[in-house]
Image (cartoon, rainbow, N blue to C red):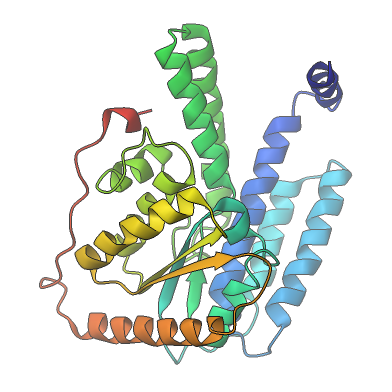
Length: 305
């Protein structure tokens, strides 16, 4: 059986394999957050990307040699922070949601983040650890529903270990990441999304709407939903974003990717960033006590795991 062979092969790496993989994943996610916050403001164009690639190779080498990758992460944080920046001109903050692969892979989304930055935006998107956390929450839910206390206890123990690792690494990058330095619990993301879609609808759709609400409450200036062409979860999110736009007044852009660049895409991106900038300016002029955001609904029963 291939599954058993794979399991035996993984065990040969030793008991620390899974925790090391999780540590490295969280470190790289944190590095990418720093890059996206620095790159739009860098003085020397291309310096941030070049440094990131170099640091990523060094981190991989340390991991391959089973060295101290935690200490290496602290060193990388200090190096990336030294990139000269000019923040004299404010940029609207745009959040990306949508299908996991498309939003995470530059080739799949036709370098969306860089194109938004070229038009004057700063971009944030959920890290890969969000999907891992969501899958783990699903395992806990199944164990609870099927009455498997041992499996549930094991999953909660793994959750505590994962959260401890996240906290440990977040301390390394504390102060270096301005927006969402540590990821919200999946239960909180699902609770925020309950206003639009119940968590029993599994998959990226409920994560996307929950994340959109979180972006709105954190003061973002626009939302971009990305999906592969013909994606059903993407179509669900696109329909729900109409109500979201009415509730929060945020500019929303919906993009589908099929491997071919659409002629109107650049114009749509430019217009969207302009709308996000107008939202940023109006938000800066509006007294904080005047602005009212819709509140998330009460926690859904399915969102408590």
